[in-house]
Structures are given as C-alpha cells and as structure tokens.
Amino acid sequence: AIDAEGMDMEIDLSNLGTVNTMFAALF
Image (cartoon, rainbow, N blue to C red; front, side, top):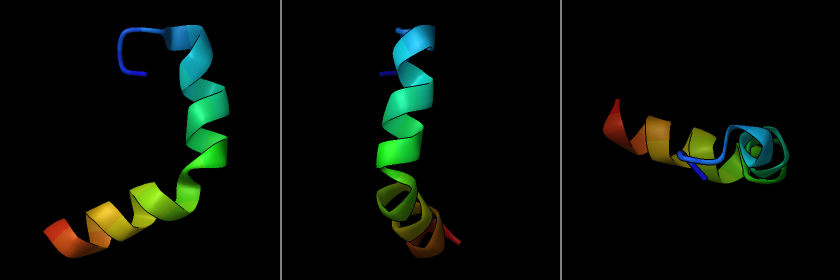
C-alpha cells in the first residue's frame, strides 16, 4: 500500500476508518 502510490488512494478511501482508529490509538 505504501509502495503503490496509485493504490494508496483506493486503500486510504477504503480504510479511512481503520487509519483513523490507528491514529487515535497512537495519539
């Protein structure tokens, strides 16, 4: 996901909830 810039957009949109949860846990 990190290496594939083109896939990042789709993955980010699909995993916004997961990413937000991860950031919430970190901060």
